Length: 179
Image 1 (cartoon, rainbow, N blue to C red):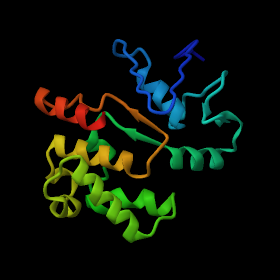
Image 2: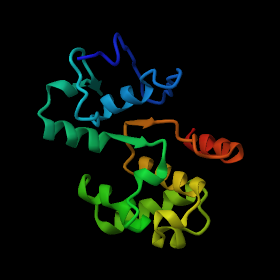
Image 3: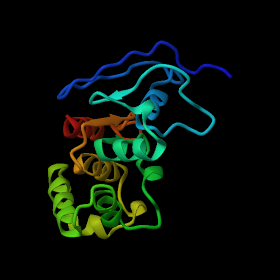
């Protein structure tokens, strides 16, 4: 098969922010997906190591790897509309991961989500939590995804062009929130 990426070396220490910059199609998204273990089925890692806090992700069984990645990482995707389930309200989508993967109580998850919605400057959290994705603006959906990404206090967050679909003013607000 054809190699999509070669000779990638990247290290991120706690508290650091790294930006991958390159033209469209250069492989930025593929790197993020490889780290998070969400590569398309037609793509696979053929050599090299991926360590998360010293743990070799490649040496883990698929289920153990998914559990580790699910508990310690998060993704802020490029397109919030495709990242959110259109047939489910925002509230359950935000708390599910905390309850299912981390074993939190519903009350604890709900409290954490409300705190984060406040931090990402969502003024009416009750309305947002009861809304379906299509009922929110693009900037509001992206704020929801930022809050969801930070909810479980992940060790690594991959942000895949999180402001692409937003106007310049909202882009600036979103980048400030992530920082």
